[in-house]
Length: 148
Image (cartoon, rainbow, N blue to C red; front, side, top):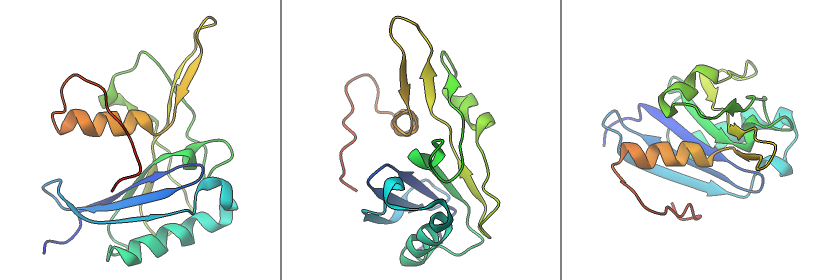
């Protein structure tokens, strides 16, 4: 089995899902639990992440990229929303990096539509859509269920 090149995490309000990924983009292992952002205090985020990384056999030298509510104002570290329209390939320019962990961790911001008639935000879903685009999902409706 090849070693993980990076880990990805979808850290929501009520759930935590993580995957180890090799350099070819293939999923090596996955983890899921109910340690969502609303169940934790900010000082618990590094240890919850590391518990999952240990379960997935991801060494500390492997970076983790996180999307979801961990980047909300009440999450681990706020990654302010990026106004849309925005290019998916440019979202990484607004990532934030926690300093309270020994692992290289990046939190991806959400997207915000600041329209007085139809304001809306996404935090995590846009990252799932980007992943689907990379996998060649094409046009259609995507369901982001809890399956790993």
